[in-house]
Amino acid sequence: ITGDVGGQVLPFLYGVGANGKSALLDVVIKILGDYADVAPPGFLMERGKFNEHSTELTELHGRRLFVCSELKPHDKFDEARVKLLTGGDRLKARRMRQDFFSFEPTHKLWLLGNHRPEVGTGGHAFWRRIRLIPFERVVPDHRKIDNLAEILVHDEGPGILHWMIQGAKAYLATKPALTGPSVVRTATQAYATTEDHIGRFLSECCTTGSDMEEPRDLRVEQGALYRAYSTWCQDGEGLRPATTRAFATRIRAEVGVASPSEMLRSNGQKFYPGLALLTDD
Image 1 (cartoon, helix red, strand yellow):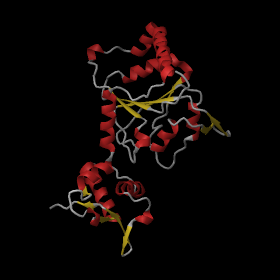
Image 2 (tube, rainbow, N blue to C red):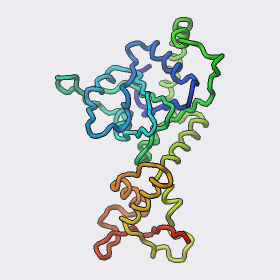
Image 3 (tube, rainbow, N blue to C red):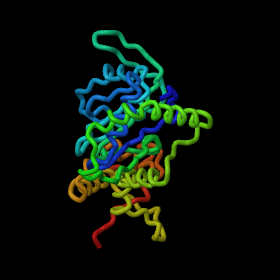
Image 4 (cartoon, helix red, strand yellow):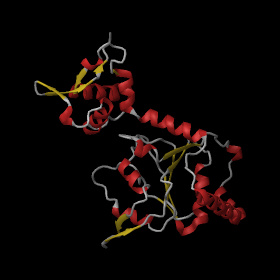
């Protein structure tokens, strides 16, 4: 409810079925009034090259809470956008047929959905922001209450607002790290591990020769490694492979090569040192 955005986190309420995650945020949205709003569909997702963000960003101006929902199967995070909108830097936007203007962010993004979006590159800068909050208890039909959010706000609105204010004051007094309880940390780490496609490919299909006497002799041709990775993604995992550029950047980091110019070269081909594909035998 404050304009403080120093936490730089994106809470993600995740769970399948009727489990209360929508009702929770509906209550907060109703209490905050004009300080809260909901995002258009796919606000934090990749949406192709015909994608205009600047007018959408005006909706963040002056908000305290901005809720992103309506996730679809096979959605994929726009990672640069997530980092931009949770980073705390000034934002630039424009309204229709008006000039651009810049503003200091005051919003906190919250995400909720029944599906976990795919993550392409990931990395520390992305995953340090994500807090996956699992909603695992499904409310049975006989326990459901229609219009629960409206009822709670009508009957308990002042008390809920007071509880929110007290929580905000407690946070601002000490500014603790927003790591979340163990169940959130465990769920987030599991999500990150699952979405680290390149890391899992390296673990399952490659060797660094750590169990060999001369691992420095290992090398793998750049194109062959990416083709093997693409096949692993599409045939074995049903995933969209990372781009060749993102893949190459990650592999160079894994083998300790600072730039493409430092890769091994032979007969016009580039090789990653200290890495090899596992053979079937």
